[in-house]
Image 1: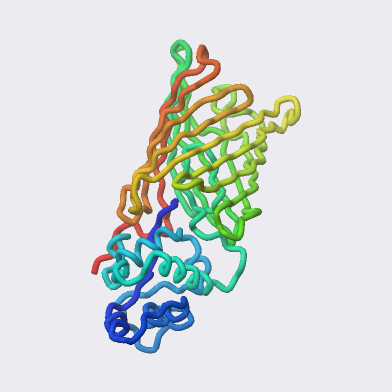
Image 2: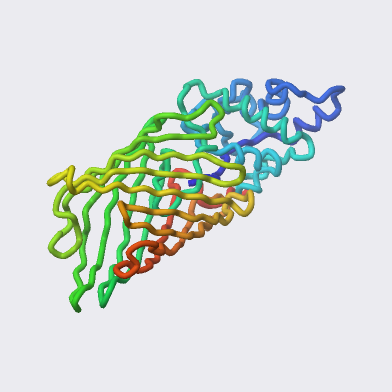
Length: 356
């Protein structure tokens, strides 16, 4: 997530503005602006159903909360200000940056959000860029591949990749499955195979009225599918309840996570406390912008820093990659830096730009 996505189908017809420009007064109330600029394509009720369609494509249905809420306000502002091509959408959506002020555009977006009839849907403004380790608080529809390469003391080395499937459920829910594949070498012997499969779920427990903060509770369960004797698993189920939080501070994204890792065989004495904290910022407003970030990662007394860089690969931002290096701060005599990253696909969003 995505954080900056397709702002899907915020389309209006340019001919509407031609008629409004000749009127005696520019509409200033949000309902009036919607009727003047948007209703000809999206319908007076925001459903996208009109008697005489003015578009070749299908406009967004603002009454469908699952479609209308995931996009950040910034995406909608970009499309209204600069037109559909700015987000890889059709040029049937013209630009209105020379017609409406920033305040008017913000007011219009707030009015459009109101077409969603069901309360409780977190909006995409809370869908911040994904860190490499810190769990996102926003529920997502994503597929990811997360590779890592590390070396330990002597000739110990580990290469792994995790495949993660995530699916949003309803307004606030989210489930996922993680399949880890690892190759571990020690004392001249290499062992490879499936690690411990992980099942997880999370639920958004709080968003503030201004939609600037989000808090999520989750539970991850690692199943003992990996061979513990070969160093590919724990040999027992591990339960990991956690809380994740996200907010912004100016142009910065702030995301944190606290968790407890508790193995089933001895849930108290072998339990470990973990925490992650991430700060990052986008270098521009385009959907496939570069995002610079820094994470603090800790498990009990083990502490590390992970500087990282994220970049959208497609103009719509639906496919992105990230790369970073986790640098140990404590226990540097037994721990080494490791290369980490991810490939991300938001599979319900358009990958390619819309052709006119």
